[in-house]
Image (cartoon, rainbow, N blue to C red; front, top):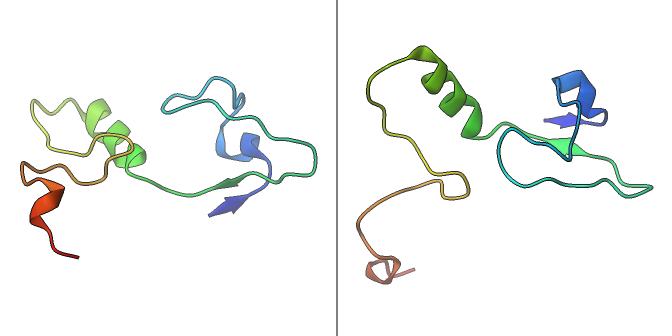
Length: 72
């Protein structure tokens, strides 16, 4: 978890993210950043492997089983 200045993580412009939607920081707000699946996804993409199974941004688990199957 990183709290504060985005530039210390190499994020120079919150209005132009590499992945996901742009955000704005309002006066008095403090940005908070945490690791997610995009980091290993970028590593897999850069590795050049011919095939990999990963998640879709915003959807951490992909399956062919519909939600209605689960009884929670």
